Image 1: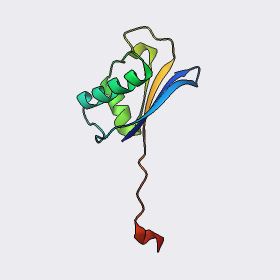
Image 2 (image 1 turned 180 degrees about the vertical axis):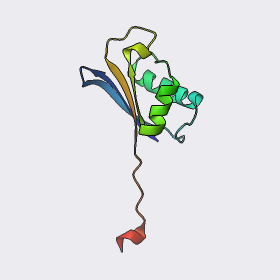
Image 3 (image 1 turned 180 degrees about the horizontal axis):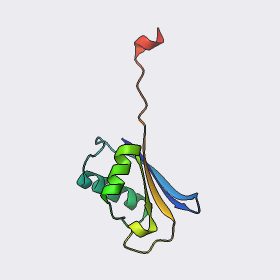
Image 4 (image 1 turned 90 degrees about the horizontal axis):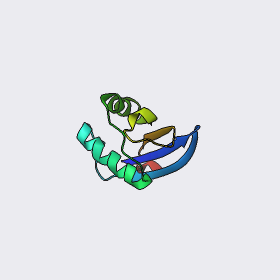
Amino acid sequence: MKVWAKVLTEHRIMNETVREFSSARPSDLEGWSVLLHALCQDLDLARPVLLNKHMNDLARFSRVVFKKADFIEAVDFDAFEIEILPEKKKRSEASFL
């Protein structure tokens, strides 16, 4: 699973990372918490609070936006967005014939 995380200020990307995780898409809060921690470490960010609303957004839209209010510590950006990138389908040799 490939995940794109970006920090936004005034709708501009200020910092971003794309990270590939060997595990499948987590279905629980604990699994997403581990991935969120890794992404925040890559971007040197405080970790936002992960709520059921965020979990629902990830499940329904493969995307979640954390606002300033989702962070316990003060942050100097407007939003932190995580998007699950779709996986490319592997083509078989038979499809080339």
